Image 1 (cartoon, rainbow, N blue to C red):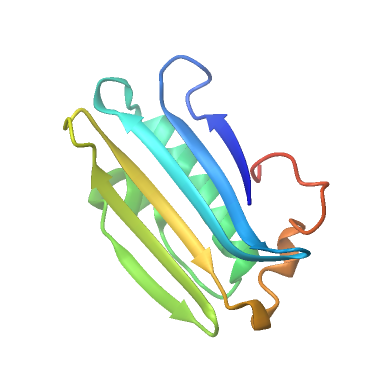
Image 2: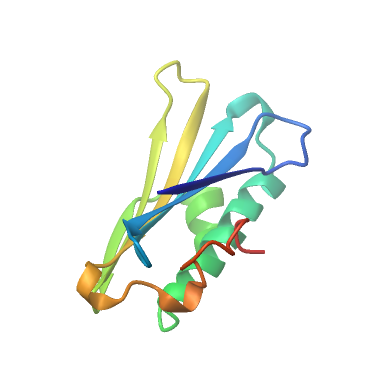
Length: 132
């Protein structure tokens, strides 16, 4: 497992995104992008950046899929699950228990036999930051 955290608003607020990946040696089987947002600090630009990263990850993993993440994230917070070939994509939205913020999660997964997301260049130790 690997985990990388990035501030979504240039350090002006507490909104962050965590990117994690799971698998076996030399093979990534699951990617998870999880954004943590505090209502009082959420700006449209913050959500747009999360949508952009979600789009980049999805396009690299499943190029044939067209998802308007900006609409899903900025306006609808609509949950979905899509299976394309052997790739499962899930988008989830959950309010914090204290009701002062929310979490958005994009998860991409494939069984190990499907050679998960070789095009993402996550194999090996050279990957050090979320897609830009």
